[in-house]
Length: 171
Image (tube, rainbow, N blue to C red; front, side, top):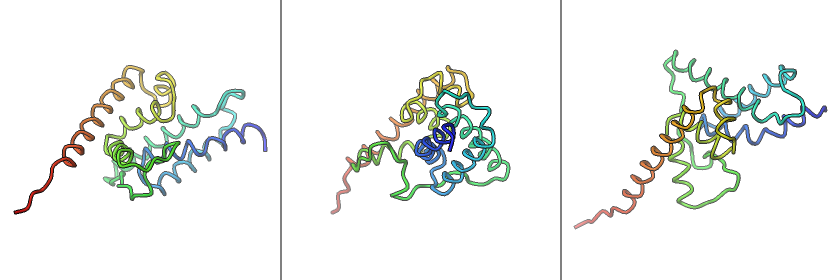
C-alpha cells in the first residue's frame, strides 16, 4: 500500500467521529465515510503529497454532507435522527458523566451548520482558517456560526440544568 493510501486510512476514526456529529445516525455516518473514502481514492491525484490528507478529506466529506442534506430537503425527508444511548458522538476521551452526556446531547440538538462549525474547530482542532476552507464559508461566517452555536449550547444546557433542579412536590 502506498504512503498516500495509508495516510488516508489513518484518518478514518476522525472521519467517523465527524460524520456522526453531522448525521447523528451510525449507519448514515458510516455510509458518508465510505462515500468520502471512495471519492478520495478515485481522486487521489487531487491531494498534495507531503501534506496531511485531513483537511482535504474533511472538505470532501462536508461537500458530500451538504449534497445529502439538499437531496433530503428536496424529497422532504427527515434527515436528522435522534441518537440512542451508545450512538452518541464519540469524543477522543470517553467520559461517562451526566454532564458530558448532556453536552453531547445539546450538541446534537443545535443546527447542522453550527454543529459542523463547532465540531471542526472545538473537537477536530482545525484552525478557523482551515475550518472555513473545509466548510466552504468565509472566516467571519464561521466565527458567527461558532458564536451562535455556543450561545445555543449554553441556552440548551441552562434549560436542562433548570429542569433538573426543579422538583415535583406531591401532596
